[in-house]
Amino acid sequence: MKRILEVVGFLLVLWGVGGLIHEWFDWFKLWTIVDKLGWFEGYEIYANIVVAAAGLALIVAAERTGRSGDRDKDTSSTSR
Image 1 (cartoon, rainbow, N blue to C red):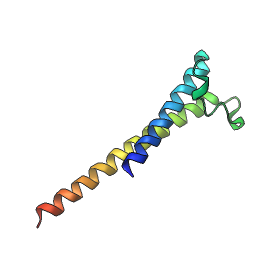
Image 2 (image 1 turned 90 degrees about the vertical axis):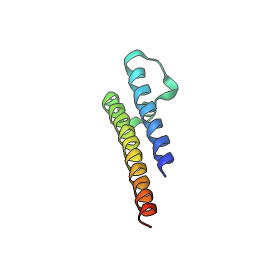
Image 3 (image 1 turned 135 degrees about the vertical axis):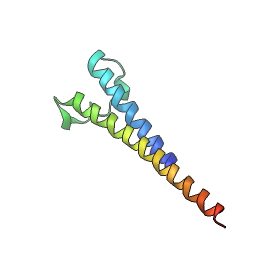
């Protein structure tokens, strides 16, 4: 589960940053997910920032779940 959250988070960060670069410099047209959706017309920059922030939040959540799982394994093996 940790690996899946990390991969999805990385892809969201990549798409968000790529979308911002596309909006500002007109590069990376293939990486834009928000631009392909018609819902965010006029709010593409804000939507790309939210996508990148959600990706970072997923990566942080994956790191925290991985650490707590490792701690539980360590404490159960030492208590026996």
